Structure formats: C-alpha cells, structure tokens
Amino acid sequence: MLITFFFVGIYFQKYKMEHTKPMNDLGISISEEILKAIDKGDKRAYRNLVITYLDYPTQDFLPIAMEMANKQNYPPAYYDVYSTLTVMENLDEENDSISEWENWNPRMRRIALEYLLIGAKFGDEQSIETIKEYYKENKRLNKILYRNEDLIIQYSETIKSIK
Image: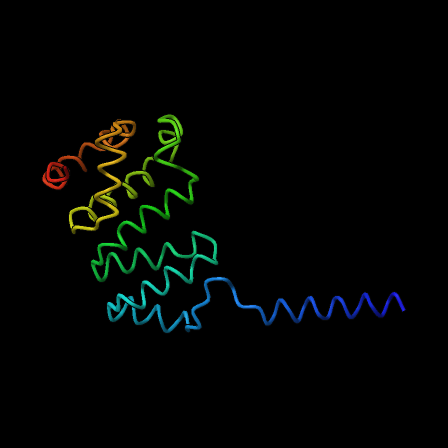
C-alpha cells in the first residue's frame, strides 16, 4: 500500500511539472518571437522575449539582446546587453567595490560599458540613468569607466550631454 502511494505521488509530481507553465510564460513561441524581433525588428516580440527569458538562465538571453542591438539598433537592447553581462558576472554598480569591477575580465567589462554608452547615445533612458547614477553622480565607478579612455573619447559627446 505504501509503495502504491509512493508511485502515485511520483506520477502526480511529474504530471504537475509537465503541465505547469513557467511564471513568465506568455504563451508565445520563443523561436517565432526571436525571428520577429531579430529579423523584422519587432519591438513587441523583443519585449515578450525579455519577459519570457526571466525564467531562463541569464546568459541564455545575451545572444538575443546582442543581435537585437547590433542588427536592429534597438536602444533598450543595448542596455540589456550591459545588464546581462553585469548580472552574469554577479556585479552590482551600487554595492560592489571598485576592486570587484577591476577583477572582471577587461574585455568583457569594455564590451558591457560600450553597449551602455551606445544605449545612452541612442537615447535609452535606462542607459542614461545608469550613467547618471553610477558613473557621474556616485563617481564610484568613474575609475572603471575612465580605464577605457578610447570609449570616453569616442562617446564624449554622449557623456557630456547626460546631465
């Protein structure tokens, strides 16, 4: 009798796992949304992917954000690349020390900062606010930003325009 309850319990657990939707499931076909977003520049499809991918490992969303940024020049995607890279590295602009940022692979750090600056250049509000809050007002990470002087020169007008 005990064995029967055990197997019934396993069956219902398996059934529940197979028939339970993830929390952020919008009932969309992920592959179709990726095609719409990346190939056609569908912003709604991209936003759906942003929500849907909250249920997946952070790094799974990075190629989608990079493609949307690079291929479609969609400003929020630039911020998403920056954000995804910092989350993957477990970095937090507000709480982490400069040394933790300095320990980050310089090439990855540079890519993240460049996408943040491009997002700001294209007018993305999250990118602008991040630069304002963490790189200008706080000045905690100015050292990190200024270690990439070529980026500062290339995006100097963007940085100056952020007030």
